Image (cartoon, rainbow, N blue to C red; front, side, top):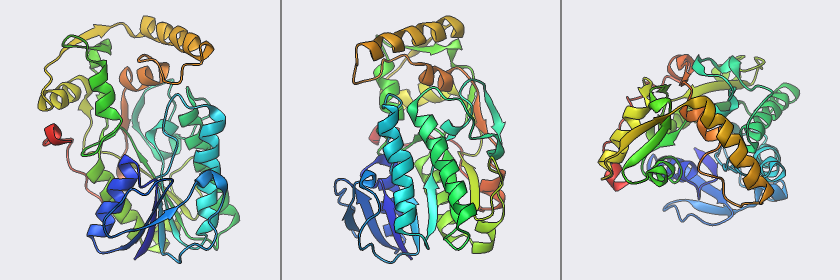
Length: 326
């Protein structure tokens, strides 16, 4: 197949592009800088500039390009995550559109307990990332409803993607270790669904190849829409957050002792720290934010029925084998 992968200079997009090249697909990568994926051609494209002039004819698009910072200004995130998504859709209107969304579209103010796809998006978020990823999903749903002649859309919602090349999850956890201690709200005893990048790649493969009738059947999203399928993506079973993080750090050569802090005081403190950081116009987020707390202090687990029964992907258990080389 002929496939465009956006965001290929990032962790997820790069892994997807390399994986699809290895399977023999004809791949174009797209990002502001050329990631140099062997065997792929590159399209230099700033998604915020609008649709691409003279695009190649392709069978599918895997849209992994996004502004992923939880500290990004709303207008900046919206330009990339909403405007950029629609620009890609308009550039390749007839192609299968595989949209890499996020578990962040679920309600950050309450636990996600085996959350089904229809439970998101919601109308309240803690940051620009969750806000604009939800807006992008809704924009794609409207597009699918208004333009049934366009290629079917498959929305994938991974949570906490990790694995070789990880630039966010494990580096952020490692940066939080102080003198051999890892402070976790509530001690990290909550259940979490994590997503190995290989699990996400398997879901992308399946979404690209899915029969059109299955892709166009009304899915389990916020408003079931013909032409749009939504699927949670995660490893086989949830893990206890504390156990997963300490195992990952151990394999990377860092032994830690988990120190528990009460959740409510931490939430109040995070709000105050965010306010001060915004007032001072700090370019980087504080180590403690309500977004981070919402993912560390509450259960984040997801129903994988669509992944298994529709995409026919059987995910592997969470594993940090080889983490010392990531």
